[in-house]
Length: 144
Image (cartoon, rainbow, N blue to C red; front, side, top):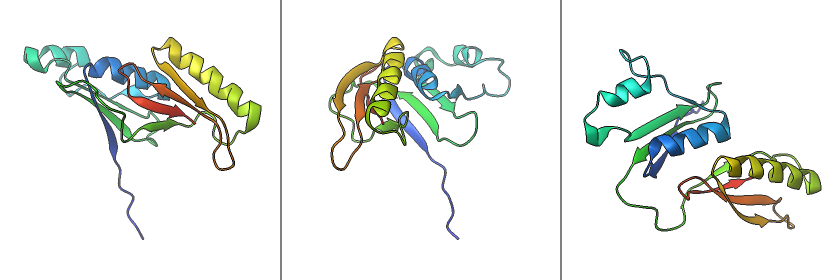
């Protein structure tokens, strides 16, 4: 019997809280609980030295099924295309115009949150249609 290993996806970014809250909205995730002894994350954050405040953020799937997402502040900006990205499975199982309509509706919702629309890749003999996107700091992801 093989063991299932849990994992988290880590994002390097300039503003971990901003990017993390964006992904909470996209995926229906929630911030992790504040550390023991603190009523809120803001209270915990204020207890840190100035250079450490706002340096990270984490969120989880409230159902416990999805992987944890972790956002860490890094000094360098994004330079090239991501080598790993998330596929947001909003149109899974749908085909044709029904899929395109669902992708368009989700794309519009995410644009209102600060995402940027990229190229729409139309279905071919192998793949269904998907919408390329960027999050609030330019990290690529797909609506699939």
